[in-house]
Image (tube, rainbow, N blue to C red):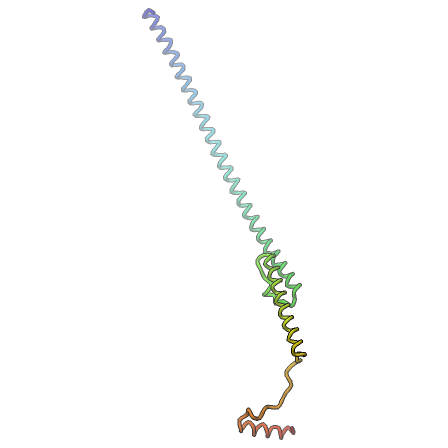
Length: 162
């Protein structure tokens, strides 16, 4: 190849290299711009997802508080019902934070009442009767009194005619 052809070939290759470099630079710029757009879209999507998640969490917390309040109200209503159904049990024995705890407390109160009832029935069977009111009045045993109290008791009995 002669020098003029070589010079022409070098010029042609230099032009092709410049064109390829320009095309490459344009492609890099286009991809960089697309990458920046994608990053902005990703940031926007993340922000939207975070806002959506925070809103859902706020709603879930509010729902949980509402459910807890409804649960507490239901337990109090159930407790009051159980107390009404067990009028002999002291109300403070029937309590609890859950329906199961109220039910368990009612069962314990009923067991306590059954024990008291059984003890009273056994005592009634043993003694035969339960006195109504105060015990009958009896005269005092004079031997347990001091001499002065014995004289006072005797004078009082004479005055009363007994």
